[in-house]
Each structure stands twice: as structure tokens, then as C-alpha cells.
Length: 86
Image 1 (tube, rainbow, N blue to C red):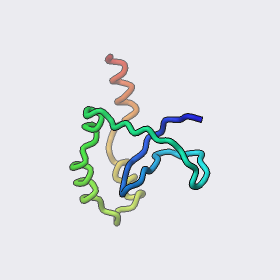
Image 2 (image 1 turned 30 degrees about the horizontal axis):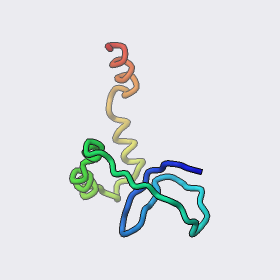
Image 3 (image 1 turned 90 degrees about the horizontal axis):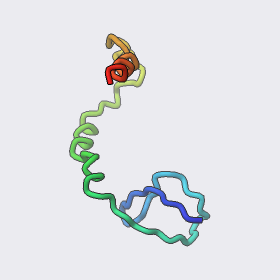
């Protein structure tokens, strides 16, 4: 069976980004194809690192939900309105 999957190379090993149906220690063939430069530019690693440094694990998910609930309007309504304009 031939399948193409996405993986990350880290510390000398390939780590699949989705489940694979392989037996333990099964020998497979890998074809390595690096993404095009414009695909790599989609992720801003520096900004992601900044966001991670700003994260506060003491804030609960429920506290975030309560804060978001105070924002007036509806994202769904905004999306629908934008679609109607186009």
C-alpha cells in the first residue's frame, strides 16, 4: 500500500502527523519532499514562540469562555454578512 502523509523530522526521527497503519519495527520506504519556500512562510515561528511565552496556564478555559461571551455581536452573523456583500 502506498500513502503520502505529513511528518516532522525532529531529533533524528520522522514523526507522522496522522495515524499510520504499520506494525512495530516494520520496514517502510520514505520519500522526503520539503515544502516550497512559500509554504514554509505560512508559519511565523518567531511569532508562535512569542505567543507561547505570553501564555498563562493559570487562566482556565471557563474564564476565557466567560470573557469571550461578553463581546457583543456574533462571529457567525459577521461571516454571513460578509458573504452577502460578495
